[in-house]
Image (cartoon, rainbow, N blue to C red):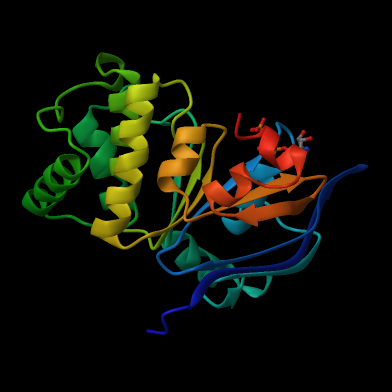
Length: 245
Ligand SMILES: Nc1ncnc2c1ncn2[C@@H]1O[C@H](COP(=O)(O)OP(=O)(O)OP(=O)(O)O)[C@@H](O)[C@H]1O
């Protein structure tokens, strides 16, 4: 494997909704194993960017390659294969409320990986729960868990199918600062353990600092700044610095 292989390559990507030009030609390369954080004011198009990467939105023009494949050229089958390599962690952990933690975790195993063996399913559920630091919650319903625990289960459910790329949309929103730091550290640990590449949208400075190898700031439809947390925090551009106060 080439050390600097780009698992995501975006060039001149544009996306509008009617008159609303949201992405005006963004470019981004993400290397295998890298954690890239996207920041920006509300409504700048951060979610639109990762939805394009995930193939949930179709860009109007430009190039978007995931694992070397130009997404717009993929037929239904290729798109399905690509989506299996991608995982999402959405804002509200998006668990099925009427299902226990075990059922929530078993669901993608059965549906996506077509796993049938009950013992293998049980073992895999237990392994991934242990990886996110949650033992003894298999029988619980999401409503019986704290917000931080639900986020962990949400992460476990994404990790269970072993995606190569994980897209996080505000993984720490709504958590107190200690729990938020725990989740950010967990994102780092999971990269080590599962060797994932991540794109993380966050407004949370500690999350950006802990998880981001590189941070990009989306402004007026393009990436206006890029660098490490420390570089951007000390930027000569006042707008860029204003994110880090
Ligand atoms: N499916 C859609 N149809 C029409 N407009 C959309 C759609 N999705 C997003 N938009 C518009 O695109 C713009 C960017 O939205 P997006 O959700 O990407 O912002 P964001 O940067 O993620 O904001 P936030 O930080 O508040 O989550 C907004 O003006 C939004 O109204």
